[in-house]
Each structure stands twice: as C-alpha cells, then as structure tokens.
Length: 354
Image 1: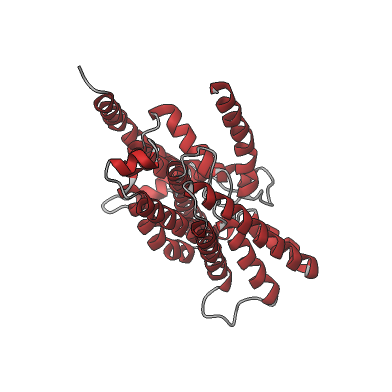
Image 2 (image 1 turned 90 degrees about the vertical axis):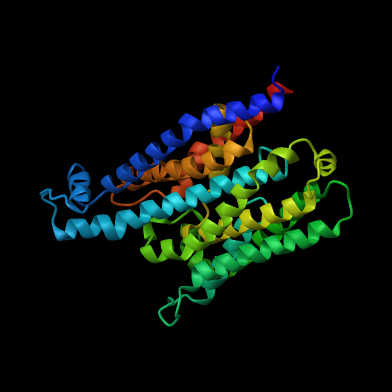
C-alpha cells in the first residue's frame, strides 16, 4: 500500500509528464501571436513566413519590407520577450511568497517592492523633468530598482526586530507599514509637483510599450538568478507547508529558507518592476490557476508558474495594443480587470471551504 507522499510524488510526475511540454508549446504560440498582432506593421500572416525565412537553409518570400521587419524585430519582439520575463518572474515570485508565508493571497508586492519602486520612480521623474540625456544610463529603472530593494530591506529589518514566534506575520505587517510610509511620501511629492502626475501614473500602470532589447538585457541576469534560486528551494517549500515547528523537526532551517526565498523573489520582482512599471495580480492569478490543474505541490507549481506566467502576460498585453488604437491601454489596467474578479473568487472559495 503506497503512502500519501508516494502518491503525491507519482501525481506530480504524472502531471509534469504532459504539462511541461504543453506549457512550452503554449509559450511558443503566445510568442508567435505576440509578434504577429499589433496596431501597425505587416499583415499578420507574413510574420511567421518571414520568421521561417530568417532561419538557416530556408528561403521563403514573405513579401515583407525592411521597414516592416524593423517593426517586428525592434518594437514587437523586445516587447514580447520582456512581457515573458516580467510575467514569469512575477508568477514564480508570487507562488514562492505564498509558500513561504503559507498564505495563498499574498503577491510579489507584499513586502513593499511596489511602493518603494514607485517612490524611486517618482523622485527621478520629479527631479529630472528635462529628461535623462545627460545620464550614462537611464536613472528611472535604476531608482525604481534601488527603491524596491531598500523598501524590502526596511521591511525585513523591522519585521525581524520583533521577537515573536510568528515571524512571518511580523514580516507581513512590517511590509504593510513600509508600504504605507512609501505611498504617503510619494503622494506628498506628487501634490507638490502636480505637473509630473501624468508621467508618474503612466509608469505605475505598466509600460511594456516602451520595451527595448536594452531592457531585456538589463533584467535577464536578475531573472535567471532569482528563478534558479527559487526553483532550487521548491521541495523545501513543500516541507514548510506542515508548519515551522514540524519543518524544523524534519531538519529544515526555516529561517534560512525563508530568508533566501524572500531575497530571491524580491530581487527578481524589483528588477522587472524597474523596467515594466507596476503590473498587478499576475502573482495571484497564475499560481492559483496552476494549483487548480496540478494540485498544491511546489515541486510542480513553481516551474509551471514560471512558464505560464510568461504565457499569461504576453496574451494579456495583446488587448491593450488594439482595443484603444492608436492609443494603448496600460498593461496594468488589463491585468487588474482580470485579476480583481479572480481575487474575489479566491476569497469566496476560501470562505466556502471554511
């Protein structure tokens, strides 16, 4: 007679056997759809033909001009790739936070990353109204990145200073306090500099429309380091589900695991937020959708969140390009429309289960 653990392991292996190939196919299709659809550029069916033409040993006349190819490669392609990186990072970070805090309602912005990044962006936009042409690098993503990291550092210092057996709750409450403080400072600055409100909010609502290959190169190292570190701890997150005392009895250093997971998830989140702005609900929608299909084991939830997070944000970005043509609907607005009802559904489901 098999044990529950053995049964769970077999279920995970059975799910991964078909779900991983399916998710890779879904990601490829989403990428193809992302580069095919847009308010300007070539006819959609020319795009896959031209992509095939660019492969070695293949020659196909797609009828695409050099200008149209420039639109595909310099505008749509980096946008799709950045959407994939942002979506995958926010999703795996959200799933990791939910595991380490044992709370399915938390998201990657829990510890003040969003508020700190928003404050950093507001400071740069306010001080540097004339633009960043004199800077060696764009100061906006740098300030957002540093603001996010400093906010989480403050959260961790405050949370860890409280001597209590429920350290995870103290950390969450500290995150709420730091978020409130950073938001108050940002609001104060906007009131005194009302001429930059529109520019600040265009960043806060997400800005994949300005994506470049430089942004992609900037975030890739952080995304890789963060994702690898989180995937390496996915089995330990399963152990933490039984509780801190039980996990300690099983030989797990709970404080060390929690610290590494929080730092890794925060590093990736701060990096992608720095170049994309604030895109909400991704870290809630995708992990919960994955759990509905494969169960709650983080051995499969984390890698699937990584892949389907990329698929989700690429697809979510498409309506924003075409619904308000020639203007664009910010990606953060689209994800909020999708995420708010989903969040309410989760709350209702949890109440029903109780």
